[in-house]
Structures are given as C-alpha cells and as structure tokens.
Image 1 (spheres, one colour):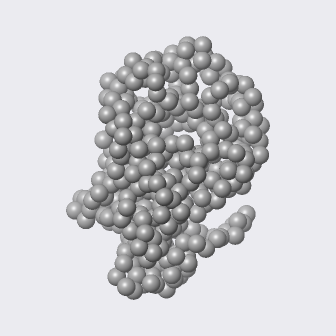
Image 2 (cartoon, rainbow, N blue to C red):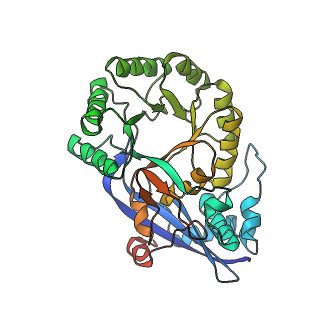
Image 3 (cartoon, rainbow, N blue to C red):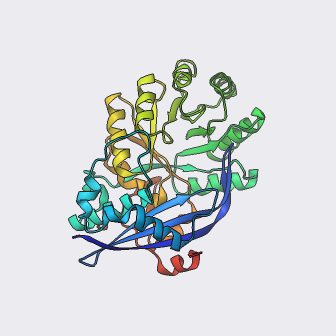
Length: 358
C-alpha cells in the first residue's frame, strides 16, 4: 500500500450554540478535511480545525500542501509514515501544512492495512472510555446551560465540566449551584478557567468554592500554561482538587510541567504519536491523563489504548455532522468504532453542504 493522491475539502460549519470561555467565543467551525488515497483503492481521512478566523481558499490549501507536505507523503507506506519518529528541534524547522490531518489520515490507512480498529492497532483491548460532558457554557444563559447539563445527563454521564473565570465570583458560584440543582451532588464536577487567574487568585477562588460546599474533581488551566512554579504553588495550596492542564504545551513543556510537580492529571490531545509519547512520560511520574476535545471524537482510540485515562471530554460539537456514523456514546462512555481504521466515513451530502471552496 502506497499513497498516490490527495484531496482537500474546506468546510465552514455553523454551531448550534456559541461556545467559548473566559477568553474567547466562537459561533462556527472552520475545518479542513484531507483525504489520502492509495494505490490499492483505500482512502484515509484526516481533519484539522482553525478557530476564530477563516482558513485559506481550497486552491491555496492545495498549493500549500503540494509545496510543503506532499513530497514527504507521496509514495510512502502509511504505517511506516505513521510510526516515524520526528526529531525534536528548536528554531526554524520550516513550514508545516496540515500536519494533524496528515497524521490522522496516515493512522486511518495504517489500521485499514492491518484490518484492525485503530484502538486495537494502538494495543487497546476495551473500546469503552469513560466520558464527561463539557458544556462550553461561558456564553450561554442559565436556561441553555441547564438544558445542556440535562442533555449530557441523559447520555449517562456522571462527570460535567463548567466554565469559570468570570470577573464576578458570584457568577461562578451560581453556575456551580446550578450543577447541584440539575445533577445533584453525586457527580464529578470539573471546572475550567482557561488561564483566567494568577496563582494567588486561583488559590483564593478555590478556597471560595470549597467554603461554599462545592467539591471540585479537577480545576483545568487555572493559570497561564508555562507558569511552572505557579502550578507547583497551586498543588501545595488547593487541597484535594486535582490540577488538570498541559494540552497547550509541547512535549518539552509537558516534561517541565511534570517535573514541577504541579499537575495531577495531564491533559492531552492532538497528534496521536505525540500524545502517546506524552502519556508514556506522564506514567513515569505516576500521573494519569485525560483526553480533551478531539476532532470527530477520534481521541477515543488513543484513550482506549492507554492504561490510565481518567476521562474523555465530549462537547457534542458540529463537526460530527460530517460523519455517516459518528463515534457512539453509551451509558456515559465513548465507544471506539470497531471498523478498520478510525471508523469515520465521510457523509458526502454533508460534506457538499458545508464545503466552501473559496
């Protein structure tokens, strides 16, 4: 099996709710879909998302990919390319075009070549991964927030993540009160501040939440991502709440974070190979991992193959409209598809509906 051709689709998908946090708000997805085609008729599919601004026209994407990516892909064995380890380098390493989409499509093809679901190729044996509902609720009103919590509860999820970091702490406390109103207290409550605070502010906020009677399962991204001493300070001060962070750091940053002792759950997502390496490193420090939102929920394959993944994030986002059969959720768990490859087949009608070549 060798890769002989590619096709790119440029998509714009409106969201069914505004999503965001203490820093940003989004109302649509700008996505690139990459298809890699082989000499024996197989197709591997990869995805890439750009938030906050449109992506270039399809003709420009094709030109960029042909110039800065295709020469490294054409004629290659998918499994060989997927397994290849890149050398970490600083400085100017050159342009990278559709790196995530390419790697995803490669692994899709590699698993198809092996006639295995991707999680099985990664060494997993159990396709079920515990999932939590992520409301992305910072810009939702109270009625919408309650509705989304109810939606995830109906899916059997016993973990819920709430956006915090509002300038008015009473807003945060009101959101946490609504969680108890809708879900009761027998639920894992995660909160996500999206780097809204300084270390001392984070310590103060966590004390207020605790004094108000809210038991927090984890606090995600409370301070800026590279404040390693700050994370160590938090770990010493905030009691039993776990610190979850790391998804926005490269491998070097994740290593420094783990060395600081300031993380209890390492959050990973993105490229499979890099995420697997990060999870292995976390294991060396005795730190479990969680999976943040991944395009088309494909992180379920990674999560199902890791020995200690606490939770997988699910926000029920619009990208799933592009799949004939999206990743399935059952009794609060994501179920890795059992079809060869990553299991996502494009819905050509939906792809045509949301494609915007220019």
